[in-house]
Length: 160
Image (cartoon, rainbow, N blue to C red; front, top):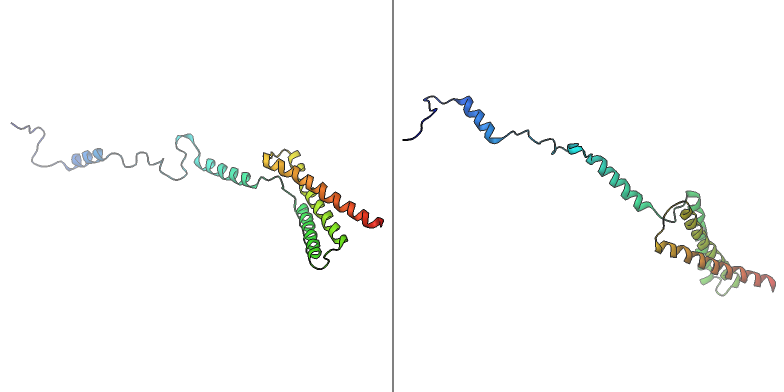
């Protein structure tokens, strides 16, 4: 025989709705972890995202050739002088020793200027990779080589 325990002729709608609600579970349960920028579990996700973004920007900007705006102007002026002297030495004043020695001198000065900014930034506490260190010393060597050649050439022109 079947159990008819609790069966009535008229259904109890309130009890039926409550049992349906219990079967579904609480729809508001654990909704707080799904909200954007919520602080669930003691972790501030927004602060982590902003700090990671700032760290990435700082890492991208870090360079051994960081210059102030005044030093950038000096660098671009030196670079423009070198380019103008090299173009003139190749076209208009082909074979002119004075233009050749001046372009060599200004190339050396530009290389020494870049090496100076790199060494001064390293002294300020910025770390340089092995490649950057080799680049600094290479620029210093080229600057001395080209600058010395330009100065010796100009002295030889002045002598005789």
